[in-house]
Image (cartoon, rainbow, N blue to C red; front, side, top):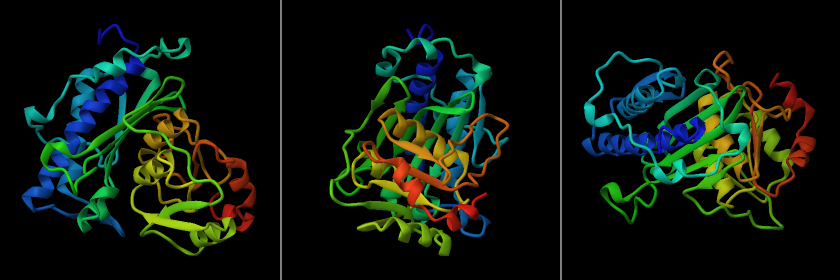
Length: 308
């Protein structure tokens, strides 16, 4: 069944199991106590969990899809990968999904997989564990089509060991799974934004949208999860701080359930293998049922001019 399923289904099904294994590695590193922190740049940390989770994901997926381009946040590694980190099984329920005609004949060379092995590294080091996600985004041509978000510490306050964690997935034109989609509350405007990378421009964008509440949390994956679960109406980040591996997976899942994700000019990001990694236009994401155009219209021109 696995080999006969369309490529897009096999990619997402395999990404789910790889993300689950990476989540266990992230928990194991934390439980061992030595995070192995390296400072890559200002406010840009890397831990042993980042490095190990990426080796797990990239090796697992490249073994199954050797002709597909994989781009990971932490760059290539020549380190040997333990055999128990390599998973080649797939989520069987995803393999059985009906696939629309336009997604049935995708070829390996059209695909790019964008991997953020640990989104929310700063929060991970500070013990804000519910902010941490594993992101695997699947682009076909220029567009994000499939995505997996694994939350390794979901329910960590009540669960223990491998009982904690959950995995969300979505494929444009097919559907979503692993979560209950909810609409945000009517009559209010709740906006989520960066917890640790704010500046005057970011704040000016927020002020212009007049939110009733601002949720400042870590991780792009975590912020989009707030939208898909109805806890926020929009994710607004008027800064070039995000990268393609931060937004590919969340965009695919959000759009699959009826939301939107663009830059601050309303332009969709390109995810082909030759595209720049930085999201220089910022990030504007809106939940299902929200008027994305309203947010674009109400952003000040002065904010947009800083993101060209």
